[in-house]
Length: 273
Ligand SMILES: Nc1ncnc2c1ncn2[C@@H]1O[C@H](COP(=O)(O)OP(=O)(O)OP(=O)(O)O)[C@@H](O)[C@H]1O
Ligand SMILES: [Mg+2]
Image (tube, rainbow, N blue to C red; front, side, top):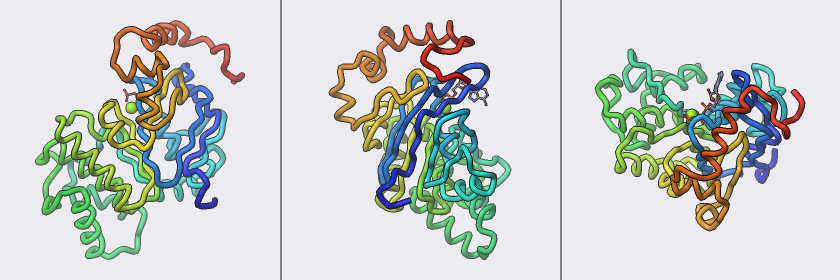
């Protein structure tokens, strides 16, 4: 792969889960060094898309190439190698309650880098916590942290191995507006400090605008719209306007009903399964 190749190159990706076509010929390219925000209604497949990018799910059909690895055809070893190059902040945050902050952040180091000394692990965790503006919390348990601090620890764990690509699933959900802005600032700073490519799933339009070099709207199983924040503001597409404006009436609400009705029927434009 050359430096100008897209870090993520997805074409015509289809995935059916629970009898429903969740991703339907979805195509998306993410360039090296860019931060792409993904927005979309609940249940439209944002987390499923991230799981395909990190190789936790495989496409039914279509291409999903990440850092030059085709996740549809790569074996376990290839997927394992890819996962070591990708940081992933899960939607739940998923800190292990029985482990202190040090052990939570050190997990990816212990799993993937067997040769590291204890001193090196502690130093790397300390440096990474400083990157997310947390210092001296290594011995605290997750239950002793605020929601915003827990998100920061999750973020530290996602970047502790200095990945080339970081995926964030709802990094600010449940935070107050100030907590949200400060996580947004952190994600933006990762771009310059670590020089990474990032994909951030968010419900929050203000966050998407702040973080995203481009914003992609997922709808009806596809990236329905992708463009810069200015392009998103400028479009008069009624579906995009409805989502961005948070309107209760419009094509998206009609689409939900239709999707529910067609839930178990193949869609006219879907390729044969
Ligand atoms: N492992 C699975 N088995 C069956 N169905 C699944 C599975 N994972 C996801 N789905 C279904 O796929 C659809 C999309 O789920 P997904 O979690 O990607 O939504 P989302 O856009 O991330 O929503 P939210 O904004 O609420 O997090 C949902 O209908 C969900 O129930
Ligand atoms: Mg989700």
